[in-house]
Image (cartoon, rainbow, N blue to C red; front, side, top):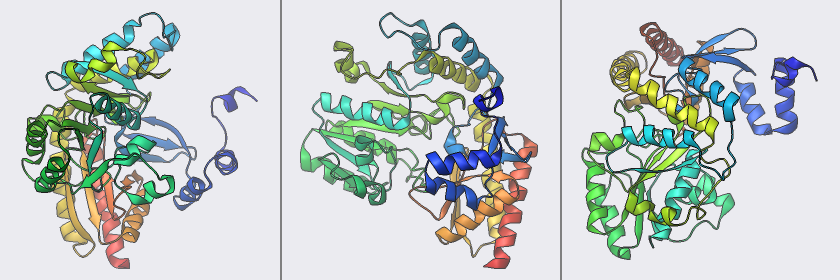
Length: 419
């Protein structure tokens, strides 16, 4: 194998063949729908394919909030990789402490303890185990919510399509409608004080579902009233995606446990975290081996996390996301109303988490294809197939905003003629 092959420098045909031979056949079929494009490089809001095409990346499932390959984050990771990429797990590692300090400095007040992990679903598992360690064995999550696909997290992810092949899942799990505090109150009353409530500030995979005003604050009040743990899943929404550091901030709520992921990676190294109050974290304080992972807090990932927080803070990306999101939301609503009012049921969102709900899933798929033809990448919604999600990075430029709006305008105009 030559150097270029070791580095991934293979042809598009070879990359496709390797996926078909060794990875998911279904994933290969999905790639074929989009022209068998193969990614080669990425920078900022741009991704380039092996055939030289350049796309505006407004997808990536929320990972690229700081853009791809941000120089400060890449430099921090490169330096750490050259110094010590992984640790012995026996001696203390200074990098994980610095990352925890940086993260807690921007978190809601009182969430001073951190458990790092490699993905959002692992962060969810951490929350479940902390809840159980305190005797909170009943789990209550919201219908159409999404919290990951490991068995514990999948028990909370209220979608039978993903759950049914893997039953039985965790016992004592109940799902109530998102936005319905009366249903939540009934569920809490039914079981006494052994409950743990898990909720998203905005349901992203459900199709960017916005809660009623004051909803999260009412949920927090109910949890206090019934001595239940409150876990707020901000794997998608946290670190500025909603135009605020946290959805919790917008609601003026401090949860018992806060889940973080996606943007924390800086688009460079996968990393996630569960933050907790000292009282909730106490079981992990008492026994450091109660919940562990070989790669938890790996130095190379911690360098990425710390640098990412520095970039978000120093480049004022939260405010930039708020302003850009307001412009894009207004522009997309105007385009939808003008071009395809019979196709687009609603355009909704907050900050740079925006959903376009089409009449049905086939039309959402058509919109994805039309946007790829116009060199824009967006995502579908796992729990709401008629909804296309647009999640640009906060570093998106005014010219790139115009490119996005023009692409949606052209795509919907083309679809209006077909349907």
